[in-house]
Image (cartoon, rainbow, N blue to C red; front, side, top):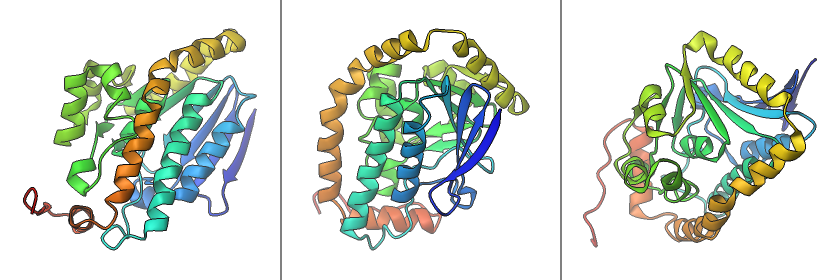
Length: 264
């Protein structure tokens, strides 16, 4: 069975029921599927509505997975809009973790910034060979406080997580597999068939006990949840700072940022 729909009014999120899984596709390839508040909310609502499926799959359109929150306008940010983006990010990640069904990231291209944190939030992650991973926070005048500075340390180890969060390097799919950030790497053309095969494995298992297993595994996510809110509060207090403005300008102008010296 295949049913297609859109979430939201602008086609930014595509929802497809295919067999035993609900596939949710971020559909803003012109910005590498970076999400704005409305798009993040639409994805969260689609996840919430997918409880009759045996699994949920998140992926991106146009050869990219997700570039995190949209950075347009950050050089002259609106505080209310930025609060909305931060809250929408947390709402999205919480939807992934509270969904009673396993959520699989089908990473078909770059997963950067909040997109990498989305991979952290998902229960399972399968990547194509061309996929890349990495955080962007300190490079663009932000900080990855909703997963990369806390839960990712549980997944891959504290030192490795700080390497990703602080150095903002890019990692290949094979490197991400070695780190433990993802479960499998496959040739690009095999990504969808492989995800379908994993969904088929999940579909013959007890949904009741898969849910118990998943919710029980949230112990570390729940323990870190207060740090998400604290971190977002600090980001809100930094809205409009010289570092945020310079990081956003440099990103949009595709140049190296020139941040102020410490304590200047």
